[in-house]
Image (cartoon, rainbow, N blue to C red):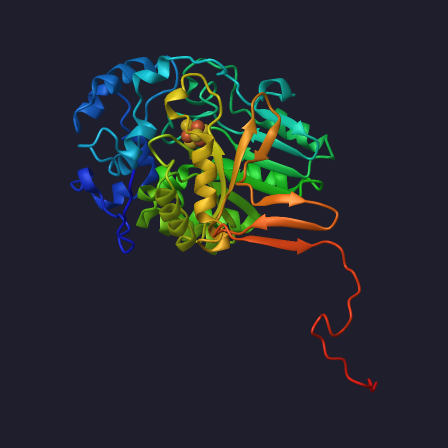
Length: 395
Ligand code: SF4
């Protein structure tokens, strides 16, 4: 895949919905009400491939189909290989279960002391505050519980989870996720953040959200004020491809950044979407321009029906090698595999170090040149070290 981009262009506009009053278009509740959720909706605007048609029919039994009009505009409707299209339009491949795949690939359910809360690491919890998203990613790790497609026993009643956090002083870090926490109303979000802030031992609150990407209209000045009031709130957004880096997303990120929200990005490495060094380089450069620090690239989790998205790990390593040293250090994310079954994130890096002995480290730099770093500090004569000592030192 070769990728070129016009660095000066940030997509903006209403596209297929240019007839809609701008006030409606900018209203996040309008975007939600007008999501494309069925074959009939999609076929009003595009021709689906047979694989996509079959996938849409199957979707209702697995992970729902939903795409906001804003995000649908980013799809190239003439290209079945469009990287945006692949992320949100179901394909029949989703019905193929391959070896090693699991419904709960990160083993979250067995570490869930109360509904909607995962407590695997001693000092932090994952708080799943809703099971809904603005749109549904076809590779979603939590497809078992979002969109209610499988009647999963999870509900957005979070009082029990709050009480659990209050009762566990070892919890210093709470990650709000879901589903998408930013789908909660301002009132609910404000209440939730206020309650968490009132717990003395909770030092750190973060939010994982794809709303800025699917529904940037949701990042209203009022919402930004809530984050300002209860901050610092850290946020990980989820952008996979430079085409998602629109003017609207940039504006939303600025509203968050100006409200004091530090922003990071998590991408999932997806075959045929972003498993390409040029695509990733364009993405990380766009992210920095939006005040977002590229944080993680995830190897895709082993979710059921996800094999068609599974990229080669060697591609991921090649991407990191193409970034490290070749661009700004801030632009280089950490490539990780979330260990299947719940072993946590493990970095997967190119090998720069060739050898470590008691005497030295031998390594190669980003250009492949070999260097040695001595570990022993042997005294040497001033002459051999090229140091000229003054005959007398006056204090
Ligand atoms: S936004 Fe997140 S939780 Fe929702 S479908 Fe996408 S990956 Fe899954």
